[in-house]
Structure formats: C-alpha cells, structure tokens
Length: 165
Image 1 (spheres, rainbow, N blue to C red):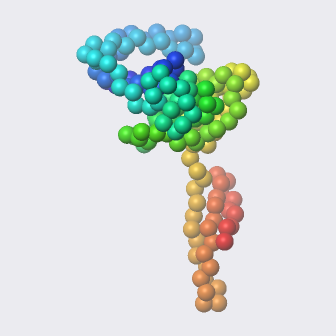
Image 2: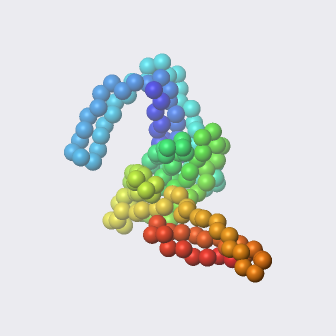
Image 3: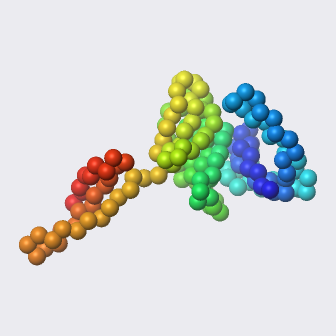
C-alpha cells in the first residue's frame, strides 16, 4: 500500500510505501479519520516541493493543504500559500500551475465526474469550481473554389462552435 501526505508545515508532498490501514473512523458526513500503520516503511519520499523550503517556483510549494490523483496518474496539489492548484505529472520534478485564483483559506480538493476541480473556500464562504481539462476541439476542412481553407473550431460542452481562421 502507498499513501501520500500533504506535509503542510514542511511545504512538501511525501509518499510512504508498505503501510496498511489499521482502523477507519467516520465523523459526521464530512470527515474521516484513517489510522495507518507504517510498519516496514523506513521513511517517506518527497515527491513534490522541497523539504522545509517554501516558495512559488514550479518545483516549490507553500503550505500544501490537499492532493488528489486523476485517472492518468497526475497529482493535483492545493497549494494554499501560493493561491494555486498545481498538476504534477507522474515522475515530474516540477508542477504546472493550472489554477491561479484569489482564495482565502481553501480547504480540501475534489474532482467531479466532468473533470472539474472543486475546493471549499472557507474564508470567502464559497465553493470554487475550476476546469482541469481544456475544451474539446475539432479540426474541419472546407474546400471552396479549389482552395483549401483551414478553420479551427472550438466547441464548448453544449456543442456550440466558434471558428478561428
């Protein structure tokens, strides 16, 4: 078993291997406490950020609060101190900022069924929703008077098209 820990005070994400869940306790419907035994794990491995170093560069974090993985193995980190969400590809040594927003004490990170990232903004009393993936696009060709014009069509979720020549 592998667990990932957002080590907030040390500005890093750690991976611990060989642990096993020993007990799960549910509190209300919002919180779940999971007690994990790390028998056999000598130490954690830093997979994102720098141990004890806060910063805003692509390879640094500042008070990471939460993380999650998508179906492709990308890790998304809620980097509270930098008001951003970063995507770290598997094996990457730096992250890419995919959301940079004004947030006030965001808590938690989730992904809905459409691939949107969701966080609870505690300070502004709101729920923030961010698109994690780009809209789908289609390339169409038109032949007019023996000339080929290329139009790049961008579509939104309602299949409304806009053309870019």
